[in-house]
Image 1 (cartoon, rainbow, N blue to C red):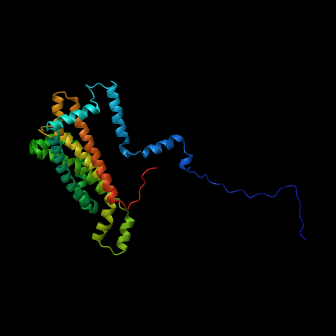
Image 2: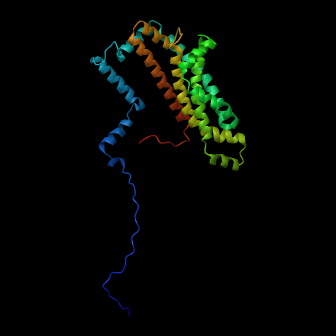
Image 3: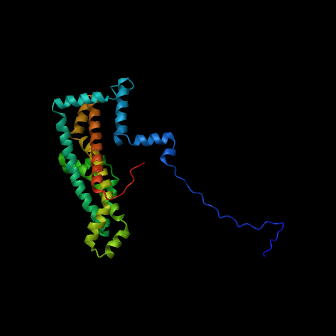
Length: 293
C-alpha cells in the first residue's frame, strides 16, 4: 500500500509554454459600419466609372449654381451643346477620325517595335545589351522635347506626328515585356526542361504565356502614352485633329470647345483602359487573382 507523504512545500510546477499571439481576422459582419459602407460602394453598379460620373454631376451642379464661372470652366451641358454644334456643322467627326488614324498608326508601329525588341532582350542577353540602354535614355526625354527634332527630320507632315506617337508607345511595351519575361519563375523553366521540352517549346509554352500579364500592363501604358503623344503632336503645325480643334477654340476664346477636346482625350483614355481590361478577362482566365474585397 503506497504512503502519501505530506510536506509543507508544494511540488514545483512545470512552467507553461508561452502561447504566441495570434492575429484574428474578423469577418465582414464584425467590421465597422464605415468599412462595410465603403465595401458596398466598391461594388457600385457603374464599377470604376462611378466616381467619374459623380464628378461630372458635381461639376454640373457647381456650374449651375454659379460656383464655377462659365468663362473659366464650361459645364458638361455646354460641352454637350458644343459637340452637337460642331457635329451638325460636319467639323467634329473628321477631327476625331484624323486623330484616331494618327494614334492607331503610331500605336501599331510602337507595338511592333516594342514587342520585337522586348522579346529579344528578354530572351537573350545580347538583346538586353543592344536595346535596354537606348530605351532607358528615350524614356527620360519628354515627347515635347523630341517634337522639334522630328519636325526637322521629317517635316511638318504626318510622318513626324505618327513617329512621335510610336516612340511614346514603344517604351512602355518594351520595359514591361522585358521585365515580364525575365520575371517568369525559374522553377517553371526547369520543370519544362526536365520534362524534355526544347528551347522553342520553353519559349512558347512557358516564357511567353508567363509574360502575358506584364505585356498587357505595358499595353495599357502604351495606349495611354499614344494619347499623350497625340496631344503633343497635334499642338504644333496641325491642320486637323482634336488638337487642332483645341487650338482653334483657344484663338476664338471658345472655352466650351477647349473642354470638349479635353473630354474627348479623356474618353479615348478610358476606352483604351476598358479595352485592356477586356483582353485581361479573355486571355488571363487561367490566372487566379485578387479582385478586391
